[in-house]
Image (cartoon, rainbow, N blue to C red; front, side, top):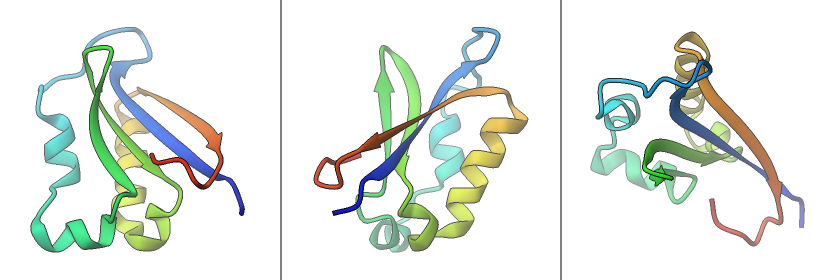
Length: 93
């Protein structure tokens, strides 16, 4: 099995400030019932050390390329911290 890349966008700017508004993850992802089927486990909103974050794998690019591109573009424009991790494909995002 091929490894996958897990992307994490933290609600912290590169200069260490907490990103506002507090519901930025929900606004950005706009999860609606019909979209959940496309995301199908490729994207999750999580709190990491008390910081709202979006965690998604590289397969989101194929399931919903608009959302994948939108999240990464938003993170770069707003100078949010982004990390990537290569994991065994059997692990969940």
